[in-house]
Image 1: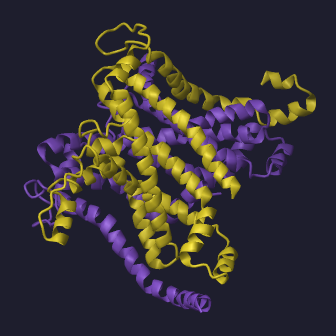
Image 2 (image 1 turned 90 degrees about the vertical axis):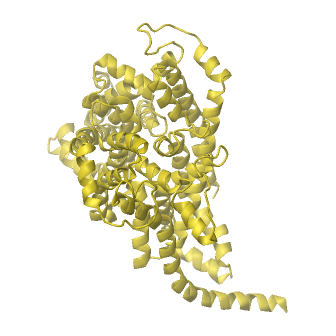
Image 3 (image 1 turned 90 degrees about the horizontal axis):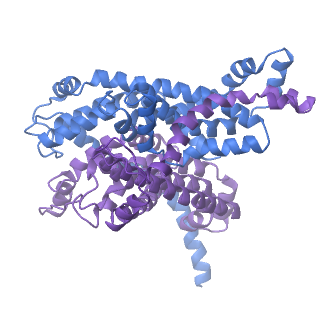
Length: 300
Length: 289
């Protein structure tokens, strides 16, 4: 603040209208509770901090080499990325399909939209437990499939080392598809009716209209939905913890699941290392993803 | 020949399509909702109303005898719902009020001032929207500050996580408020605090409503960060669900897990039903410009 007063009189007057000290409380909270822990990630990932001894010693890159050599690092990283991509795909497909289905403003559509928003406001942990029950080998989903085909069905939805990650990503997408739907609906509303009318007069059928006019004009909504789905699911925990706890055989062990598990075992340095890996991965991916999606908007 | 046939066929389809869609669309919408939402929700309600023996393998069969409220009573006492409810409020309300006030203060300055410094601070302040919090070292820091396992520590962590969201939403909104509105008050001799509290804050109401909804949703349902910071010390609704379920799955108490899920979802569900239109328009207005 004192620095401002030394500036020329005119700017000093204007600047004191919006004093910098208004920033200080927010910055203090951000620094203490966000930036300091983030920076300490870069320190404690290189120590042997654990609950088994009181001293914390420098350990070099031991944590990285041990997590790398026993395969957990690459596995958790791969699982997290695959999960994030699958969630982004499913959530956007479901959300867009719902938005197109429920686009017209009828009473039925409005009620159904509200219904699809209920999973969004529910706890993700609760959603996970519901689907754990639904997807049991002798659970309700297999019951329905069995009734349809008239045979006994016992598909272990949550017990496959290959497909369970897909199933869990679908559950994640189920929880959030109502939000994507709303955002696509808002995007569809912004499209000029005249443009659509012109295309209709030119003889465009519904599929052509969607592919070459409406979908491109939805670009801002796609940007928001893909970016939030990707980044949100990279930070995922609740649904996977409630359905598989990372299993079977570590095939759904997201970085956050690993962090929670190793933290519970008292291996704090290893948990910190994984937390740093998550931070770096999100940082490396977030900015290119957002820039790429924004650029796509500009072209249009 | 084909050239003349094709347009006439599409023309016929274009005329007929809207009418056919009118009849099919509501049925399709309701059917899809019943399949994708009705099945899971019915499973919850039916299982939450059964006895332990009946709920052992949760399926879609209706309970032979509706015991929903008996099960509610059981989880209400066994799951410490009352203390969990107040624990959730205890961390959520101060955190939300805190981020709204501090975030708006910062956003007002960042939205009004130009220059490199403001731009740099703004970029740093909103980086938390995408960057994941360093959950393990937060615990270490809280221990050093003597805040480990306390409500104050949890509030600070949530504030550090969601200030970015508020700053992002509000700064964009502040820029749409004409500066003349502030000038008028300033001419009357109002200082920055008065201008902010009397002029700016009331104008921010719509955007603060949106931010409140989003952040309440996140904090009310958060279990990951709560497990690290206050797990075992303070009850919150999701933490207690985690405990009820961890013990319940072992004991095969699906009826209690689902009864707990219904009870814990009710506060947000009721809020949503009451303020449904405002919530939906608030959330979508922030996303698509």
